[in-house]
Image 1: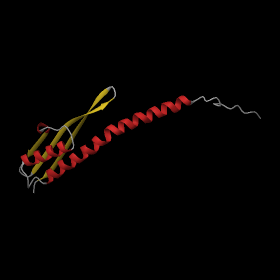
Image 2: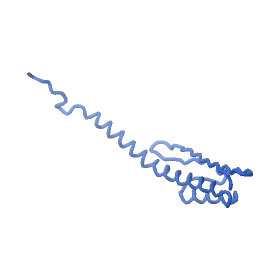
Image 3: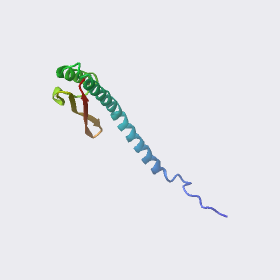
Image 4: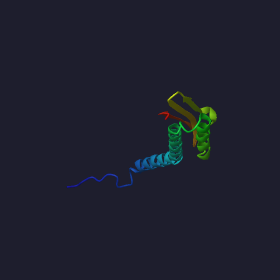
Length: 121
């Protein structure tokens, strides 16, 4: 019983190289995007918290708190990206901004939109 052995001469290493290249690309994407996603989640939490505290804070205070947190997180949010709509018993806070993510060869424009709606007590 003779069995033919394949790949004894080192054939098939191209697949390994392709796998390593894909792993390197995935690592680069994760390295660049995960910190931005964490910062965006922190800002989203501030937007929600400020909307919950709308009974104690006026619109200017809410806007300043959101923009100050964005600046501390190095997120490119301007005052024009914060929209606050206060009605008799409800507040809506809408925050939009775009974060440029640099990759070799191109820049990805990652758009974020955080929204919070709460009753005012």
